[in-house]
Length: 470
View (cartoon, rainbow, N blue to C red):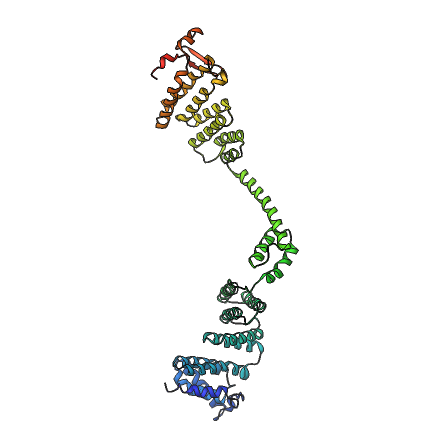
């Protein structure tokens, strides 16, 4: 394009000392002040319309004769250079154009900028522009650092993340220490927080909140060595611990933060915190367990008691739970009582209690065969309790046992119940008294008989020979 050679002029102009150092205003324009303002107006209108080529000669005059006429000369100049950079693929020309563009920011500070805050703002914008155009990070960093120092809290949000990124990159290659990186992180965080608290527009507040997250992400990335090391966190958190040594939430957070930052967990202070935390953890665990226990339904407490070997308490809790637990159907209540009966039989050998609980299960679920099977097993196992284990007193328990097994078969068609009940009947029929045993005791088959001992249940007298084929 015909104006591309203009970069040679700007390179000379922006690096020259004679014209550039004068910083003249509109009154320096050859045709007078009004003509200088008109030239300024004309090129600005053309810029606004997007016609850079047409604006170039007007802008060149403005920069040549009236560089201090308006800060817009420099703002528009950056746009012009960025346009020219896009128009060429010549590496040498691109380098020259970029250098000239960066120099515009310095000249703007010299010619039209009075306050340090404004100078700082311009330097941060220069650094941002250099970042966009892949300039040397060391130069970007130095411009950013000086700009932030001058600008204070009044910095645009868009320029801050690149500074954070470049700072971390400089740390990675050893150009700055972690102490310097820490200081800059603190400065950036302070600036961002100030703007979050003092910005008037919600959109600005949102931008700075998002920026804070991004800055944290880049500074706190996993680096070796880390920017924020043990010493850094110790200086922050140990005074907090010393001020509030009994705050569990605080000292736990401090311990994990310091250990994760590379501090020696066996150091005296961390060992002290760890021991304190361990003792508190055990106490909290016991309290949590107690609270969980108190809030749990009794059926759950029954399981815990069983696991602890407290079988009697377990059985009692199952029965209490069957009566008291909310949201439990009748079938489940029956199961609870049946479990209590099983515990009393198998673990405690308390046959009378086992029968009581089995009967309570039947009260909740009358047509269930398992409780009858269990009661039958209780009776069948009572021979040694009610006699010597052999002989008439031990044999009569089979009558009531068989009664229970028959009852199970009658009310419950479950194949398991049917098979189990019949197996028990077939097994224990042979242990019933014989006809001779009945004769000796003047008993007749078919008469009512109350089985003594703990059983105390009525049954019908039967002789073994009656059941040769049960």
